[in-house]
Structures are given as structure tokens and as C-alpha cells.
Amino acid sequence: MDDSIQIPKDVHLAQSVNPVSKEKSLSDPINILVIDDDPALLRLVSHLLELEGHSVRTAMDGNTALQLTLQDCPDVIITDWVMPGINGLELCRRIRQLYESRILKHYSYIFLLTAQVGRQNLLEGLNAGADDFIEKGGNNFANLKVEILVRLKTALRMRNMQRELEYAAKFDFVTDLLNRSTFFEQGRDLWTKSIRQGCSLAAIMIDCDYFKRINDTYGHQTGDSVLKLLATVLQEHSRGYDILCRYGGEEFCVLLPGCDESIAVSWAERTRKRLEADPILCDNTDINITASFGVAERLDGMTLLDQLVEHADQALLFAKESGRNRTVKYSDVVVDCYDPHVVHPSHQMLFDGITAGDVLMPLVMTVNINESIATVADFLMKTRIEALPVVDDHGDLLGFISEKNLLAVVGDKERWQDGIRDFVTRAIVVYPPETPLKVIYDFLVRVSKRRVLIVKGNKPVGYIARDLLLRWLRNRWAFIHLRQPDEIPDPGKNLYTPEVMKQLLDNLIRQLDGIRMTFASYHYELSLNETFQHTNPVSGIASHASKAQEIIEQILIANAEFVDQMQADENHHNILAGHVHGVTQHSLVE
Image (tube, rainbow, N blue to C red; front, side):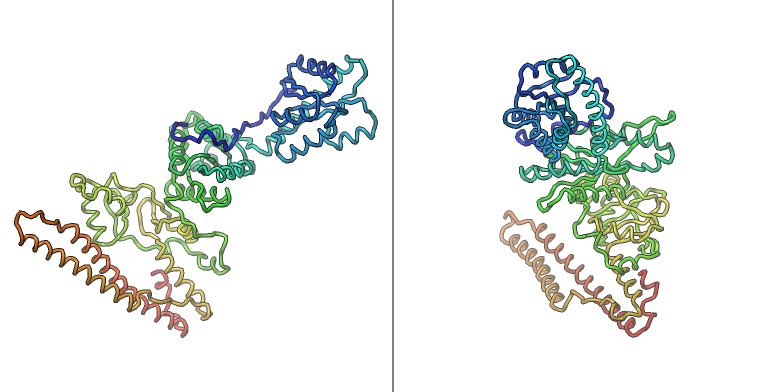
């Protein structure tokens, strides 16, 4: 990580997660806590365990033992039964409560060291949470040594089994990253702390591009190697307190505390480029690996971590749909008004058997990549078209050019005649004609992009925009319910009422009058003194003229809507009257 990603020194949002080793030898040294109020026995047992290579801490009472356990949870606890204050039974109960409350990071195997033998005492100890017992045998320290070492081996076997179960419950066995459930468990704590401390928090969803193709071509073993490589790259670019997980399949998720959306985008781009530059070798063949990234940050209105991850997932969707191997941030593409879970029962009927080819608007205009900025800008201004597809000399799609792309060079005389190549947006969402319409609908209602291109091969053949889709679905709705007049949607009212039209015309007159007054003032100044520092009329005239042009466009739109309204009223009347020819399949497509 570079210096651009920092977190305030006084903010501690999360601890690093160290995966539990999946393979532990019984001879590996472990952390043992020994508690006894007899100093001689305490020294004997601790010395015996230290000779075996284990790390041993001691306490002479239950209160001290609890504090030591909270500071560093031991693997094994050997405690006396009878002690002042908290005795061995109560200590067992409290340690088990701490573990069940997830305050302790792992399970501790507990021995009760006691001279109290008998069935009832054993049951009482097991019920309190003890795992095994070591009997105090008077002064026979040799037997005590043997018993401790033998029972300790049993404890180590049980501990290893417990750790393996804990590992399987928390970590992904292929990548050694957190699994999804543990990610949300730790992430919610991070979420709460980030809100309480007023810290930024970003989420990044990552999807390995074309992973199924890799599995099908090279086999699942190679697929696992790809997932491990992706996990390794993510870990190398992460800090100790970032939270990473394998979210499911070929998807991963990362939480970056202390990072806003822009910093998270930089992190994602560095990671993406590193992954792109690091192919893996399979059967003497380099396999290039790429991934798509969706980035989102915690917003003030969010109440759940799930919302943040969902935002990142929606940005990831756009990254994949717009060509993969790219980073997309939520704030650029996504809107919040769509809830995919709220669907009217008759909603699905609108899409049954319908593909993009049935609905698309044929594409009549594209721009060649070699056209100049001046030519394209002039065309966009004259036609009021917001964007156009850009193609090469063979008609293959390269991207699109929009008004927004060209705004940056307005006024730059040297670049105005340059080609548009450097201003083409390459991230463009395309679908083949056979795509089910419902797929495109689900995409358009989730993102702020207003249209998608329909491409056959690599050549653009049409587009589907929101307004076209709305009109088409409304007409199809009417067609489906021809025999149920009560369910036919009302055509609605024309928002351009006579009052609105009058306001438009009055405003147009004011703008034209403003142009006249600007010229009049300029000529008057000229008549007063030839050397007078005259006001430049260009900015005032340009302002009034631009507003007047916009008003004229609205008047033309209003006129077109008036014609459409008349046609909609006529169609609605024909449908109610039973004249099926009023809504033909051809008119539905239009």
C-alpha cells in the first residue's frame, strides 16, 4: 500500500486476521496457563511444561487467571479446583461464557487439577466446562509428570480438531481468506466503529473475468490456482486491518477502513493492473488473468453493511456489462430507486418471449474514429443527440462520443480540429439481439445509464433507451389486457398545458428582447466616444441566444408531445371500443 491510503493514528477499527494453520503437529509448542495457590506445585508443573518446549504463564488465583486469559487466550489451561476467590469451577464457567460470547478468539482446553475424586465431583467439573482432570497424587511427582504429559497429548489432539473445525467455519479452504459469513461478522463490527468514530469506509467487489471459461478449458485445478493468485494479489495490496473474503465462486470482497471512494478506486486500479500483468503458467501456456472491480463508500443514509456491499456489487455489475477488466465506482453509474424484490404479479408477462431484437431502435448514425472534434461537436449541437457510437473503418464498435467528452476542449483552438480518438469512451454496455429483454430492463433500472447498444458480431445495429423501453412496455401492457378494459393504462396527460406553453413563449420573447437590448447598448456606447472602453457584447448575446435555443427546443418537443397525445388518446379509445387494429404488433415495436 502506498502513502495515499492512511488511517488516523487514534482510530483502531479492526485487527488483522491471521488464518489458523490447518496442520499442527502434536509436538508444536503451545501457550499454556497454569493456576494453583500452591507455589511449589505451580513451579513444578510450569517447569515440566517448559522443558517440553511450551510457553507457560502462571497465576495463583482465579482473578489473575481471567485477566491473563483476556490478554492472550491460552491453548490449554491447567487450574486447581480449590483456590481463594474464584475457584476452579467458577473459573471454568466464566471462561466458557467468554468464549460463547466470542470475546475469546478460540477455545481453550481446560484441565482441573484436583484431589477431589469421585463420580459426583467429576460430573460437577464437566458441567462447569472442564474437559479433563489430573489427579493430585500426594508426593509422587513422577506419576504426576507422566499423567500430565499423556493427558496433554490428548488435549493437543482435541485442540487441533477444534482448530480445524474453527478454520472450516471461518475460512475458505482454497484461498485461505475469510469466508462470507465471517466477513460479515467482522465487517459489522468495523461498520459500527466507522460510524461511531466518523471514519470513511469503502467496499470493493471483485469478479475474476471469464472464470468459467478458464475452468472449462484448463480444468478445475487451474481454476483453483487462479483463485489463489487473485487472493494473493489482494493480500499483497492490503493492510493488516483491511478485511478480505472470498465472497462466493469467483467473487471476492474487500473492506477498506479509512478510505473514501476515490482512494478505494486507486487501490482497485493498482490491484487490477498488477493482476493483469501477472499471468499463470499452465501446460507451458501463459494464462492472462483479469478482474472487474466495483467500488462504493459508506453514505450517511446507510444503516447496514449489506447496503454498502450491495452498492459495490451494483458497480461491479456495470463493470462486467461494460466490457470487464475495469474499475467502476457506484457514484458514477447507479441510482437507488430500484428494488428488484418488489415485482407485480403481471410484471413478468410483459417480458415473456421478448428479446432485445424485438424492441431495439435501429441505429441510423455512427461516427468514424477519424472525424474531427469540430465536426462531431457541430453535429451533436445541431441534432440535440447526446452521444453517438464510434466505429472504425470496418464498422466495428470502438466506444461512444458524447457532449460531456467534448466540453473539455471547447475554446482550445489548437485541438478543435484534432480527431476524436482521445475522447472516445471505451466503457460501453452492449448486448446481442437475442438477449432477453428482462435482462436489459433489470440493468437499466439499476444504473444511471439511459441506454444500451445492441451489437451483432462487433457491429452496432441499434439501441434500447429508457424512454423507448417505457413506451414499448406500456403499449405491450395495453395489448395484453385488450379483453380487460379496466386494466388498460390511461394514456396520461400532456404536461405541456396552455399555461406552460404561454410561459415558454413569454420567456422566449424576453430572451430575444435581451439580445436586442444588448446590441442597442453596444451601439449607443460606440456613438458616445470612439475611444470608450466598450463592453464586449459577445457573452451577453451568447447567454440569451443559448436560452432562446433551449426554449425553442422545448416548444418543438411540446408540439411533438401534443401530436403523440392525440394519437395515444385515439389508440386508447380504439382499444376500449374493441378495435384491435388500433394496437398492432408493428405499433407496439414503434
